Image (cartoon, rainbow, N blue to C red; front, side, top):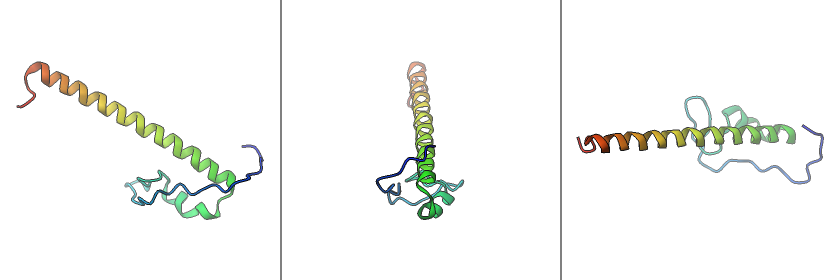
Amino acid sequence: MSNQIELFEINNPCIGVCQSNKKGYCFGCLRHRSERQLWLNMSNEQKNEVLRLILGRSNRIQRMNARRCEQLEMDFADDWQTGDLFD
């Protein structure tokens, strides 16, 4: 990363959900437990890196959800065609 001066404060990405999965990632802001705990002491460069990681996590979750929807649609279409929809 560059040594560019930050003119504005980097806001905390917390959205107030504050519940974690088994691996320690928050369902709300997608930060890991350690990233949440250390946020106030991080440099702007470190905060920007966490925000970059959050974006990657969000993109992975969206792709995973899209695949699940596609699979459900395929399963539904299969059940519809075979007549197993209400069995």
